[in-house]
Image (cartoon, rainbow, N blue to C red; front, side):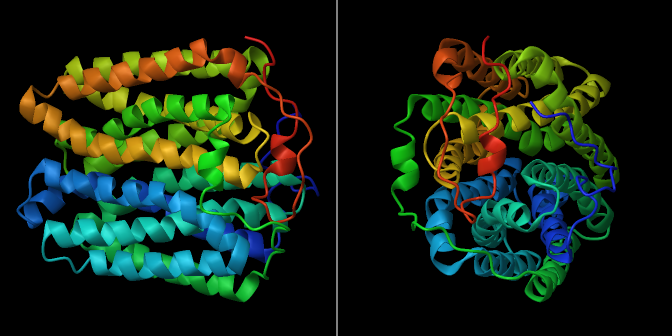
Amino acid sequence: MDDPIDPFDTGSGGILRQPKSVWATAGASVVAFMGIGLVDPILPSIAEGLDATAGQVSLLFTSYFLITALAMLVTGFVSSRIGGRKTLLLGLALVVVFAGLSGTSGSVGELVGFRAGWGLGNALFVSTALAVIVGAAAGGSAAAILLYESALGLGMACGPLVGALLGDASWRYPFFGTAALMAVGFLCIAVFLKEQPKPARRTSLLDPLRALGHGGLASAAVSAFFYNYTFFTVLAFTPFVLDMSPYRSGAVFFAWGVLLAVFSVLVAPRLQKRFGSLKVLGGSLVLLAVDVLVLGYGDHTTAVVCTVLSGALIGVNNTVYTELALGVSDAPRPVASAGYNFVRWFAAAAAPFFAPKIEEWTDVHVPFVVAAVTAALGALVVVVRRRALNRETGPQPRHAAEDGVTAFANRPAHGARW
C-alpha cells in the first residue's frame, strides 16, 4: 500500500491544491451525502406533522434506497452515452426538484414518492461524481479518492446537524435547504466543470448483473447486503428509539458522522495496512454486531453511546467494502461497482421498512437483535468466502472516464493473506 496521503499537504501531491471543477464537484458531493442523514433527527417531527406512524415515515429511506438500487443498472448506461458532466447536472436537477417538492408534501405518501425521485437524482450524481473528481483532480487518483471519501464523511456528519438546525423550526425547512444548496452546486458545476472523455465502450443495462457472476464480487455484494441492513437499522430506526428533540438527535448523529468520517478516511487505511482488509472487515463486523445488540438492550445513555460508536465501525466497513468491490473482479470498475451497489442498496431499502414492523410484532429490542445477526452473517460470508475475496486482479483496461478509480483499485490489495 502507498503511504497514507496527508490531507493537509499543500504540495503538488496533496488534496488541497485542486482545480475549481474538483472543488465544485466535491462540494456538491457533500450536499448529496447530507441528503442521506438529513431526515434522521426530524423523523419524529415528520411523523407528528403528517400524522404518520414510525413505520410510514421510515419509508422515506425505503423509497429512496429502493430507487437508488434499481438506478445502479441505469447510471452507467446513461453516463457512458451522455458523458459525466451531463449526468451530474441531470442528477442535481432531479435532486433540486424533488427535494423542493418534498418540503411541500401534504401527506406521508407524497413525501415518500418525492423521496423516490430524489433517490434517482442522487444515484445519478453520486455514481458519477467519483469519476469526475478523479478525472479532473491534481495529485493522482489516490488523493482524489481521499477527497471524495472526505466529502462523503463530511456530508454524512453534517446531514443530521443541518436537519436538526433547520428542522427545529419546521420539518419542511431541511428539504428546502437541500434544494437550495444543490441548486448552488448545479450552477458551480455548470460553470467550472468541462465535459469528461466518454469511455471507449458503452455500458449496457445488463453488464452490472453479468459482473455479479464473478464469485468474489458476488461474495462482497452479499456480505455488504447483510452489513447494510445493520447500518440502516441504526440510521433509520434508532431516532425513534432515542426519542430526542431534533437538536439532541442531530448532535448524536453529528458525532456519529464525525467518527464515520475519521475512521473511513484516516483509520481504516492504517488498519488495513497492518492487519489486512479481510481481518479488519471481519473484526469490525463482529464488533458492530455486539454494538447494536448492546444498543438495543441498554438504557438511554448506553443507546446514545453505542449509536455514536457505531459510526466508527461503519466508517471502517465502508472503506474496506468499497475497495473489495472495486478490486476483487476483472470487470471494469464502474460495472463492478454498479453490480455491487445494486445488491447492497436493497438492504438499505429493506431495513427501514422491516425494523418498525418487527417492533410492532415483537418489542423494541428485537429489531436490534436482527441487526446484530445480519452483521454477524456479513462477517460469516467474509470468513467462508475469504479465498474468493482475496483474489488479486490482473491489469485492467484504463479508460479515462470509466469511473476514475481504475488506477487506485489496481494497486496491490491490502492483506493478500488472511
